[in-house]
Length: 227
Image (cartoon, rainbow, N blue to C red):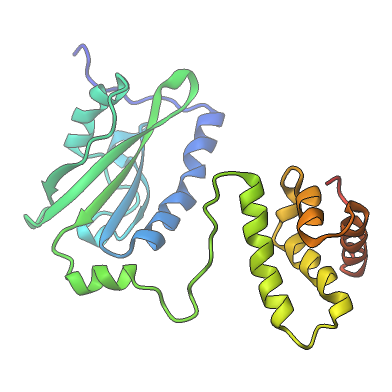
């Protein structure tokens, strides 16, 4: 029948693409919480399309389950480049779910798989709020800067504040400790980070390089990488 979705043969590169999404399924489930079923489909075998799934109890599926009728119906629209649109459905028990189906593309922009996210809407609100609530000591600081200079300056100021308040660090070693911590954070991978850090600390670029070299030598990292 014309226009009917067809199974495809994946080449090796496309197989690698789909395989790379398997940890994405796991990581999304950790991030979103147990209310969300995350499913990865391969279009190579409609009868056993599910190649990864987390929280499958919401629909009663496991790896090896077939593709859904709705996913087959949506393939034509997705192949035309239409965006993934959230929709509401029900599972086998008639329980409500909010879902979206995202196309995964391979060679020549053809769809090779589907990433489906299903929110089980009967999940107790307390459980959903628990997934959004930071656990003790689980908080992390992240800087959403508008440019590299702001990012480096913000990171440096946070480190400098802690180091300057630490009386166990000799005053003569404070800049050294600041540079070492910025290095461990990966800040010197950014363009012009050495110049910006030197200016903010009131030292020369050579001093920054010296602290990095000494730290790498002590840590057994070998030759200093190009900064």
